[in-house]
Length: 109
Image 1 (cartoon, rainbow, N blue to C red):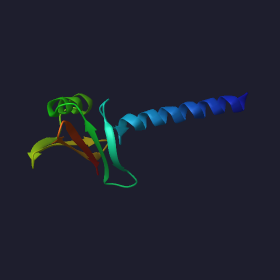
Image 2 (image 1 turned 180 degrees about the vertical axis):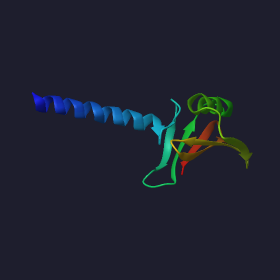
Image 3 (image 1 turned 90 degrees about the vertical axis):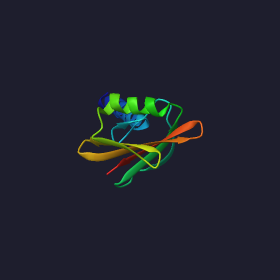
């Protein structure tokens, strides 16, 4: 009986861990329509890149709702750069146009 309880607990923990990883990156949330195409997370700086159909304004609003006001923001080479601090780590979110999609690059240092 004790082994069964431990097995169930481990199974639940594993499924919860996978769910959290699927929609966040270093505790930076991803949009529901995120189509991830690159992830480098073995060491810092870590990077995750995804495509989204949302507009730049919608993506900016999403990150403001999820992370609050950015510490700084700027448009550099046509890309919106949002700078945050998440769990004592510097985070930069770059949003750019790619045809009918938006590319979102999350960099954690």
